[in-house]
Image (tube, rainbow, N blue to C red; front, side, top):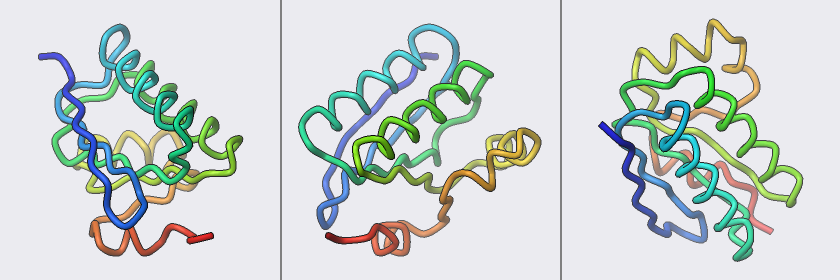
Length: 116
């Protein structure tokens, strides 16, 4: 199953609703391209909704870190929303849980972005 990405705007924050698997190859490339495109257009605040992501491999983790870094370097923020148990556990194991700003509620996540 490949990954699907849909994009929407909520109060100046770009929400990427991801579903499927973020894995080496198509999934991680799709994520990279989507984030780079948003940053290129000037969308600096990005929220990745991972509620429907059932699997992330090491390449996918690398892509999340890369997207986070790219947003930060552009003066923006990238946050994660609604992790599944599997993804949550993976971020705990890799110690990345402390790097990302992770929210369970979309309204709280949107409010957490610092508005310029």
